[in-house]
Amino acid sequence: MKKCIAMILCLALALGCVAGFTEETEEKKLLGFVRMGGNFELRCRMPEGYAITAEDADVTHYLATVSSEEKGKPVMFVSIAYDELMSGVDRLNDLDEAALKEIEASFREEDEVEITYRETAHGTKLMVVREVEDGTDYVDFYTVYRGYGIELVLTGAYEEGGEPTPLTEEQIRMVIDFLSDLDFVEIEPAA
Image 1: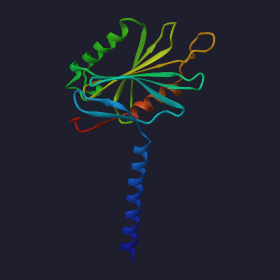
Image 2: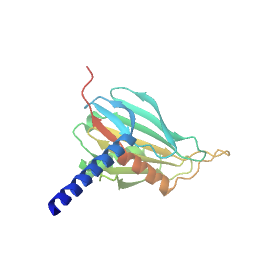
Image 3: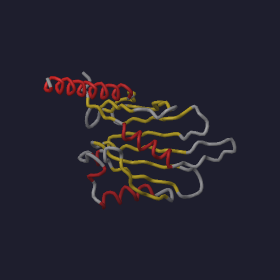
Image 4: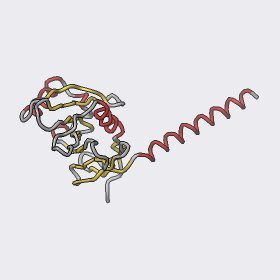
């Protein structure tokens, strides 16, 4: 009798896990496709109150804007592009210090920035580039996944007087969560 109850409980737990997984997958929205260096469908969960508008997508890159109709919310600009120089790199975590310094230098060419590192919920390293001069308040998040450079720029929304609202840690966390939820789902090549 105890074995029968234990088996029923295990079956109920397993079915609950499958239902939870299915529910999480269904919430993710199809963003688009990239087809260079592999065939991938891009899926992600949108932050509450946000929608995505694809700007441009072809086999090599995907560009989109993630924004909210609610006044005062920051805007995110997403760019995912295959980079031949990164073709052998699975994640930003795989690059050595010298390679990271080269990427950092490219961000310092035009703006005065502060560069730190964070991680997604899955442990993927993110280069976080924050503008420190007066002007547009932005934070640029850069990482690599399977040869694709993934860049997401978060900018403060502009108020009536033309000044951008300062970005908060909560808004930065929203982007890290967005990137944590971004899935590259491998698909069959188009015929």
